[in-house]
Amino acid sequence: MTDAGRQAPQRRIGDRLVIASHNAGKVREIGALMAPYGISVVSAAELGLDEPAETEDSFGGNARIKAHAAAAATGLPALSDDSGIMVDALHGAPGVYTADWAETPNGRDFPMAMTKVWTLLDEKNAKEPRTAHFCCTLCVAWPDGADMLFEGRASGRLVWPMRGDLGFGFDPIFLPDGETQTFGEMDPARKHAISHRADAFAKLKAGLLD
Image 1 (cartoon, rainbow, N blue to C red):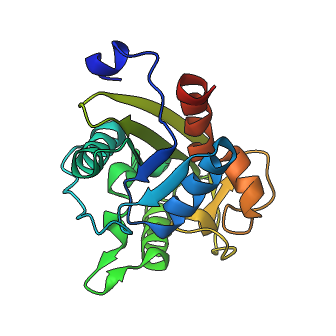
Image 2: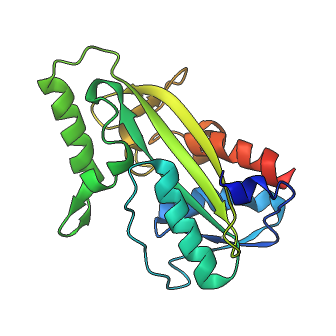
């Protein structure tokens, strides 16, 4: 949370919110989380906003860039998400560069990125369980420059081969602790209840919605 955020503990989101993302999967998840609170959401992509360069080396830093850019462009509160998967045997990689690992000249290829991660683990003879964590930082920014950060995590292990096509990103190889299905196999409602984004959203809810 910034100093401005600390000085404004009574802030609320209001009834209209910009989701500062061009990732359709993230927009769906965040929209589903916001729906029960009567908050109307619109994505940065729907508004034709440019994607700002994510130049920070932390989830929080990149989340702030995106939320502040959307809030400044629209005059509305904006919610951004920066998230990724951290693999313990790879010293936390890909981390904030999760999406970069999937980049190709023709767009993002997450099956390629997942194969790359598993191949690196094989090359390192990484022991099972190959533990990993999905991390998420949500940033709510207001047009006056204030913001608040909320961090969430989901722990589990990586499995191979890929399983399921219901999620996005690295979901098909991530098996959450205590579960028998990967995020890619899991009913979206179940995933929304236990994901890193849900963990971060629970903290946002306590801070801004309750």
